[in-house]
Length: 117
Image (cartoon, rainbow, N blue to C red):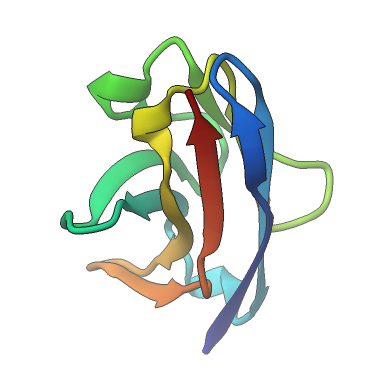
C-alpha cells in the first residue's frame, strides 16, 4: 500500500503563485510516477501534470504549460506543483496521485485552490 499526503493550496489573486506538495509513503518501490489532477465545481476531473519515478520525464496538460511545473523534491518520493500566473479558471480541488504499473491507484485527499479575478 501507498499513502499519499498532500499540502499547500489556498486563496490567491489572479496572476499570483502557489505551490502544492505531495509525499508518498509505504511501498513506494511499486510506484511508477506521480501526478496531479484537478476537479472544478460541476466539471469532471482532469489531468494536470505528471512526472516519472526517476524525475526525468514530465508531462503537463496544454492549459497549464508555461505556467505550472511539476518537479521532484529533495525529500524522497516528494513532488511539487509550482503554479504561476494563476487564472480564475484554475480554481479547483487539486489531487495528487501515485501511479502503479497500470493506473493512478493511490490518491491524496485533495486541496482547494481558489483564484480570484
